[in-house]
Image (cartoon, rainbow, N blue to C red; front, side, top):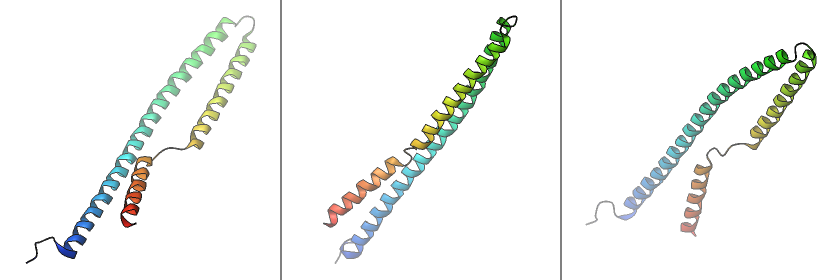
Length: 127
């Protein structure tokens, strides 16, 4: 009399169960990484917008202050120099953002590493 779960069918059943478990774990890992990346991007967008607002407000107030200080003698030069500084800072930020965009992200890197490790382990078993 054979025990339940032994033999060829039991082995196939256990193998399928293990495969489903591994795939399920990898899908959960991918979903977690996706959610973390989405939250990170949302947080980064919110903080970036707040920083942009406060920096723009501060820059406008600083420009107004400098123009008021030099109103009698050099108001045109003050506005011109401050405009040039703002344009150079904006151009620098564009270059910085472009560099960040071209560098890419490490999205799903942990999942890809786990899948590569699984592939190596399966390759060792079959050799």
